[in-house]
Length: 301
Image (cartoon, rainbow, N blue to C red; front, side, top):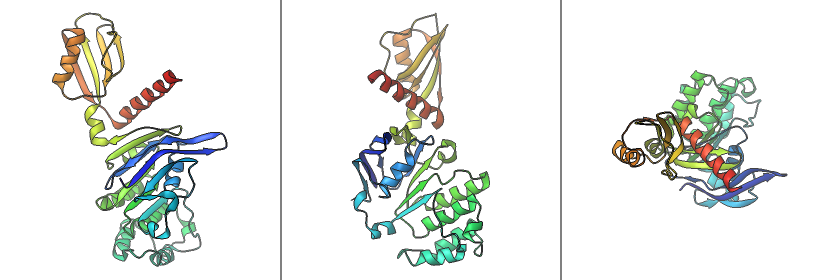
């Protein structure tokens, strides 16, 4: 794992902003950390980079305790944040002149290619850039030295569609050689190019899994019953939020394998049935898992 955290916690005053987060990011992944504003994503990322210290728990980045990261380690770690501070008086060209000297692995050819693709005017002062142009500039800066790990904190926030597509294209070009951890509060912006996903809410990490696995095992199931029936006392644990209305049973199957296995389960409990199972969007799956986790916490309280 290129990133591993164990029971990571951060508190500001009486507010727990990160609560016992254990995150595992495999090398080579494009890993999405998704959640609403205030979920704890930024604080988690800043602890990974030793910008802030955890109150408890541990974080390992590139095999090193995050609290012991050295300047040489940051030659392998890129960081892009929507709140990143830039030397405002420099032009784009002068900014990149300055950065090249800091990174032994800087690839001037890659920089040139990315600047052209992102349409970054060299003579434009950084303080004259739009939000989208600023984010494209810092993204190129984060990619041009070919980091082993790239951490992106809300890089697409507030961008128009065209600018967002240009940024994503730049990320896709480097995805084969760089592990990417990207945070967003909009799943739709990033789901199509990520390989893994984790969801945070109110400081808690609700789930983490490969997108391929998550999509494969979740189905929305609608069943037509032969007669009006009640829910069985002990239905399978993988049937989430089951409800019966008249002759119709609806639930989410969180361990779907195939139609034959599902039909056997349904026949066991309800006899003759007809059913339809549909694949679910990542947004719908995320909502189901968060709802399940919140209910579990209420029941445990």
